[in-house]
Length: 137
Image 1 (cartoon, one colour):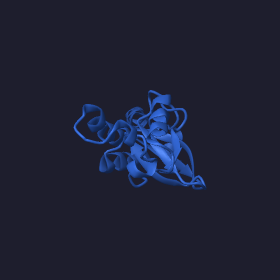
Image 2 (image 1 turned 90 degrees about the horizontal axis):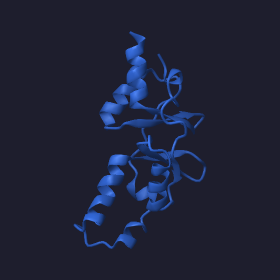
Image 3 (image 1 turned 120 degrees about the horizontal axis):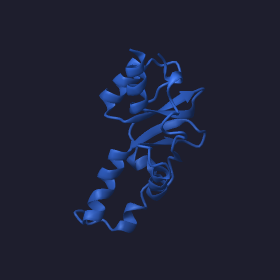
Image 4 (image 1 turned 120 degrees about the vertical axis):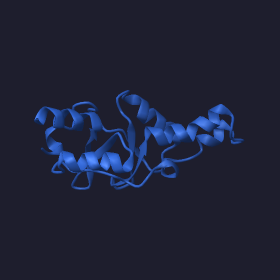
């Protein structure tokens, strides 16, 4: 079974920001769909350059709001998406679900973008993979 058989069932639209967008915009993109667990970062040509999983965002903002860092909250929002993103991990519509599951586990992710012709066409949630593999039996 392939990614094309099961993506876009949980998260209908991928959360996407530009690499120079503010952390505030990243958080807004993440909050726009309560089912989303990642924000995908693109460059000015629309090519994927990174991924910001919700865990990374939480680890970044938590110390600022808990008062454990001396940075002012205004400094927190002066950062850009490119300062928070991890290296991109992605699948294509033709990727097998077994390979997608491997990527989730190896990279500690809950969802990844689906790329076709170097553009993000959606995202694949780990629950979509689990459901599809379970129903396959």
